[in-house]
Amino acid sequence: YGLGFQTTIALSGGGIAFKGREQNDSMVVVKVDGAGPQDRFEVLVDDSMAGSLRGSGSATVAVPAYRQYEFRIRQTDGDLLHYDGSIRRVGLYPGNVARLSWQARKITALFGRLLLENGEPAALASVSSPAGIGETDELGYFQIEAEMGSAIDVQLADGRSCRVVLPQVAKQDGYAPVGTLVCRPHAPAFRISSAMPTGKAIQPPKKTKYVK
Figure 1 (cartoon, helix red, strand yellow):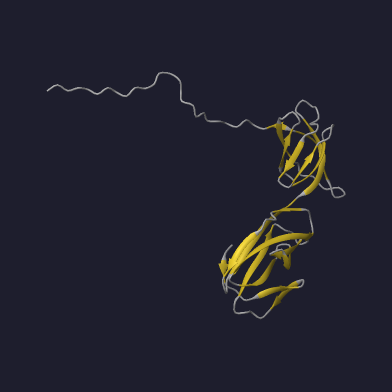
Figure 2: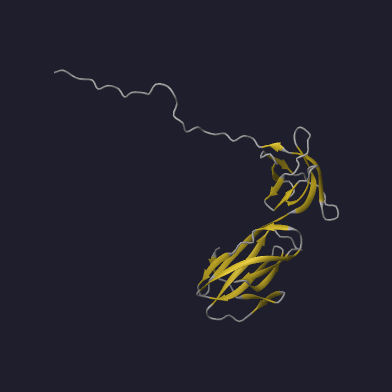
């Protein structure tokens, strides 16, 4: 977070309100980057609701100084989003303004079918994305929450792994059908061996004796 100074503006009810400033008040400005105008969030301070915000707007919360606070956000309405819900801790002095931000990305509930390169279904596999986890059935059908255009990782029942990139498709009745996808193995990582080369060891040069 950054620190600075500004006029006291506090959140009251559903909107922004000017209020009288106590001598020891400090301010915390909360923002969610990547949220749309339909997305709404609550701002929680020490697990108590202290304000709300919509979309790319910000909420400004006045709190007494000389204390440390735990801030977090909680979505209450809008699109399906993947965001970091972890706590932000901040300590304040009189007159300080701390700025806290979270990053949100739009995700979609999607379904499809996974096949292996040989055409067989990726049956009973674990499927994961940064936004969710899922499983395939015996025929390779799966459902998961993920960001369009991102990659999902697949752990097969026999221990092998593969990856598939999700296409950009339109939603139908709240879900996005991605169709049949082929899961391709991960490219092997390039390893640098730390072993010493075999062969004769290089001997240091012998010292030359000089005769007077």
